[in-house]
Length: 305
Length: 330
Image 1 (cartoon, rainbow over the protein chains, first blue to last red):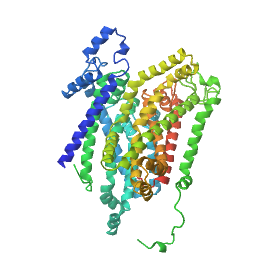
Image 2: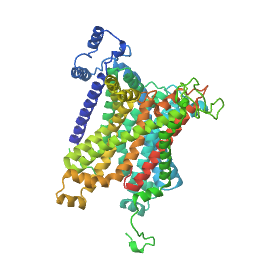
Image 3: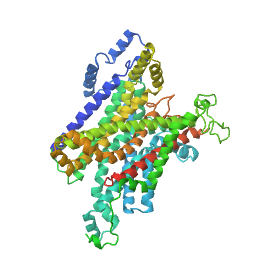
Image 4: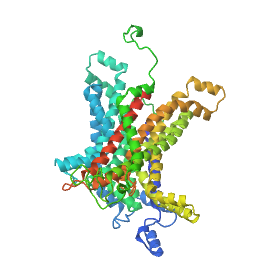
């Protein structure tokens, strides 16, 4: 067990290192470099490049960046008045974590509940309509539902605030918008997986000994049926993260997503790589936790580390 | 198990063919014809529209023609530059559907080859290759698409401009014209490539799973006994048996690509003016929402066309999956 965890941890570190290096190399190889737009003379440009350690070959830049990174220094932003990247990210990260975290919980909990109800009443009107809406919610991306929600619930009906971030009512619309497609996907996954398990022999045994449908599903089927959902949690975290970009832009939330998009548009290599470092560290850690959790949940897995 | 012969509804006859199952699925067939109509309209209708509709005009923010203040030849109204929304929706559909289709094909080539090799090789190779797919699945690949597009946009423009100047110097009018006309659409190439490169994971997983089953079947063993080599077994025997399942997941990849492309265009990192896609039209629509003076048509029509098309693609894909891959569960 310990060897397995250690191996997964080390492979996570390799992935992290690869992702960060690739991002840095791509972001410094933009045509003309980060100072292109400032129309500097050659000497001034060279001076700025050496000030920010963006001189020399790409590989040596990467080497210096990684050395600083290992000391916990993400360098400075070129566009935010030389604020350190750590400061910028530290300011924006909480908003994104709240938004992404609440959307993630809504999607996971709501999706499992919806899938459970649909599976229990298979082929009923409830099942058919909820699965229809699930497919609709998967198909319609949040940059359509977002503006429509704003126009309908925010402006037309005036139920919910359309701007600002921090209070619970302000959080409702963006997090539901972000969660909706994933909630639907989890619901479909849960339903199908429950129906697969339902036809197993041990489920017939559970019924034969007198358990009602709901208890049998919840107690016995869920233990196995939840596994595909747990596997999906890792990729889902990544999708929620990128999905939050548009939600932040539609609802004007100043979070990490907007920092990332602006850093791309303003060619701000350190800020961009810093954001990717934070993102991938979060995801790699999360996937590691899911992996370990999975091996505890699924007793059938043989660990050969 | 009860005796099969004793059950009154004993089923006789050949097992249903996947295409028959699909044809009986009314929702899927409706979605199929809807998509055909949208695609044909996107290809042919812009050709027949009068020239004045296609240009930038003075009349900006004209509401749809049946509303108060509408102009008859701007059927669905105009945007900030006085461009006709109906025309832009259809050309946007060309871009969005085209990018979706081509990128899905790119993903098919990559994922199909990868899955085939992984499944056919089996053992440690298979284990390693599938572990890589798992890892890539948990990386937020759209971030890389964004960074990739930003990094190579400039070089790609230069390359096209170089082609244009080369054509000019060599007096190849067609090349000069083609490269010049392509410059506004340059991002499409980058999008197709990069989205195809990130969407192949599901395809690889599905193809690999099928190959694992197929390669153990008797006809494969027979052809190996007759001396056929790995590659020819793959192309002659495995590939034809994969075609329907590949078609199914290809259909499901197209809406995923369209969604990603529109996502990027919505954030201003994808298709740019003067070219349009559904995502960039939605961005324009979302920017003008305000409580006082609603320009609802700029949001409602792109949102409607895009969501119905994506819905139709997903329903069709679901129908195909029910018909050809009834065992799959997600």
